[in-house]
Length: 179
Image (cartoon, rainbow, N blue to C red; front, side, top):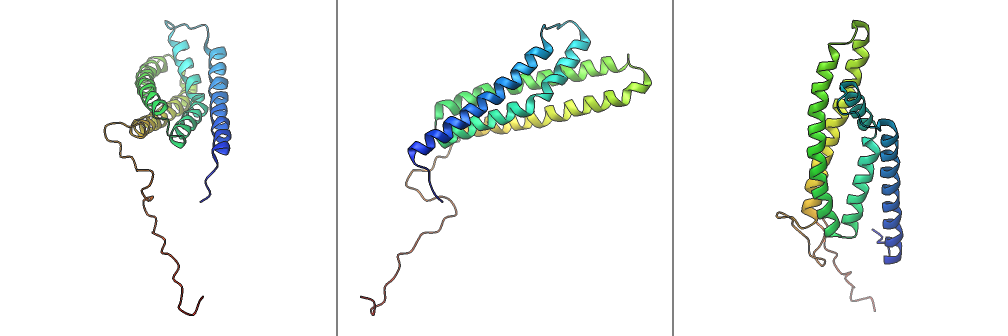
């Protein structure tokens, strides 16, 4: 496997961070223009806003995983620890938002006409499924970031230790006939 030089590493990492930044800013800007001004006391607004948030979770998670990859690639333990802490906060917020969404969805479903319930149920299922998958991804990346950042159970491989599964290379033997 070819290893990049330090100069190439810097370019790859910079591109990864810029791409993560672009994905996150674009998704958050779309959200801000769609859901602001906030109307937290309005049941319909809360339901719609959470649905819009779930629509932007995919690019946000791609950005999140890119930052995790950059932190692991360059062994930036402070970045990984920060990501683990922020990930835990985001996970708790997403779970709380998901619970609130389910309660709002149940309350709102009773007000709907029978003909529009199928579309409503599909939208609720989509938002719930995306939320569950993203919550699982956040949990996994938070644990991974914590361990890679030197968490309690982190098992770091010394720089000179062989990679797991690699075979030692035997020196080529020369025959007595070879000079």
